[in-house]
Image 1 (cartoon, rainbow, N blue to C red):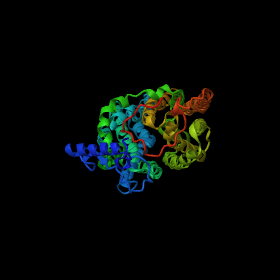
Image 2 (image 1 turned 120 degrees about the vertical axis):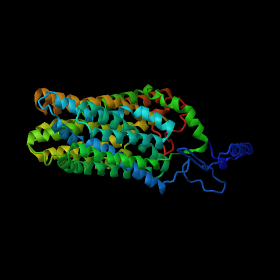
Image 3 (image 1 turned 90 degrees about the horizontal axis):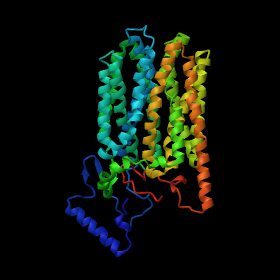
Length: 497
């Protein structure tokens, strides 16, 4: 980020700042100009102005920013509310299939929801590139439009093959392009209150995960699958309109640099040179193989085991509610845990999640399944809330955005494969017991891998101390970074290592 003109002390620096202003005037560009999807901020300060604010662009920290928070909340809530409620749509799709004697019908149907969820993560590295190149607004509007088309077109067919395309690829891929800018845009409007803004968005989006199963149960039973998908598509249509509010704010001196360095930044693979990141990414990717299985198959399992399809929707409500509580609670707890030791919290969440998945077939009464689902939701909230803080600790603020994007991409294949594999096991064994037992193994294995991340980090730090070289591998040392200092889309200068 360029230095503020008003903070210059020497006459030469002041003269350079005046020349910069003259060049801006000659080119017809002012500091208050708005071009395209980017609002250029006035970052200058006068000598007499109190300089008690954090360095960098002045962000609104409220006002119009709360409209952006509402739009981001609607986006996150709609996308993941629909994804997490797929268990209800899954049952409706099974009932709609004409050939119920097909031995692989559950395996084939599970691919619809698995493809959709997998595409959200698989497209993440590409979405980062589009967001940096075209801006949050255009990327989000385009993604919401594709997701709307995918959901709406899914209502006009009963073919699983076509729904792989419409619901799986179009809705899933479009959701990815709509979702990721909603995470980026908050950092453009909030600095001091970014934690509060994220908390509001998290709590608000969790309400969708609570209410959408109720809605789908009502309209699914009375109107059927086709009309249910049409109603759900309205959520994405509203998101198209709300995405208009995503107007990124960047410092004026960096706008041109963003375009020049976009390709270099998006293809930056430097995060994989850090052994702690590689181990963390491998552990998380392993754990999510069984992560999405309960969301898809739990409804059908309850129907087959307890012969009860009137209360099974309440399980998704419990998962959604406890996930919202877990995001708020563990987000605060994560702030109290120093450095990469936050990984231990994520490790524990994977272990508990795996154990809960194994316990599902052992539940003899419906109420015990509710207890299991509450723990599943808490683990989900813990995993999501501390993913970004861990990335910041392991790779530093400059490369955190790339680290998260690559991690989500790595998660795509195992998360997509999990539900179909569970459906295939059910089709051959005619029972979900073994499917849930096996679904609990990957989270436990992945959590065990995460156990070694803080240990490796500690060994690297100790090696640095022995060499008495504090400049080596600086990104591994926990840094105190103000929220919003490093906005995605800003230049990615070469680090000091």
